[in-house]
Length: 227
Picture 1: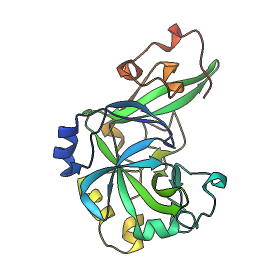
Picture 2: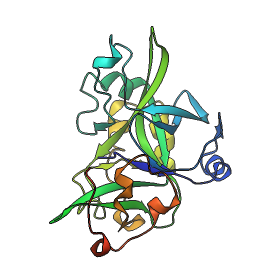
Picture 3: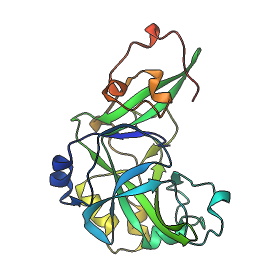
Picture 4: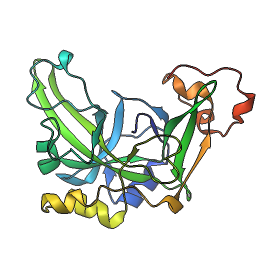
């Protein structure tokens, strides 16, 4: 799954790499949690980086307080499940990040690891977005599509976010038949990725600073926070 991420790449570099302009200032984030804003490029505005709430709220939901806000959608069923099917067909997007976190089980608890590209570049994950309107006004939300893990993520978790390369990004945002979009939803090449252990401070989303991404020696951590 993808349940925590970072995006601290300078805004100018993001705009250059993704050929899009941020609609508002992008602050560096080292520990982004669900229900917080994430940077997104939508299929209806491919030249703009917007901020959308992480956790999908479909337009047909009557009471947002009773909705589960899924942060991930499984690639294998995304075209079929009512929560995601219409968005998969009509509202696809890219979710930008430069790393994400997974927790490996150990005899003493769960050890967080940071997963990133070996070149340190930002990347785009396959996402779906929705617009909801109600008494609380308009809300734009997003979920991230997940697939089977590659060789780097597999020891940490049984799912990983779908990461799209440059050609795949264009196809994902463009008009195509469902089979073509579905064909993009495999794991990213193992050789392009790396992971390393980080402090259990990442367990608390209130901790959001550069120290979050620093590598640690797990044997020197005496306790593991809950996650």
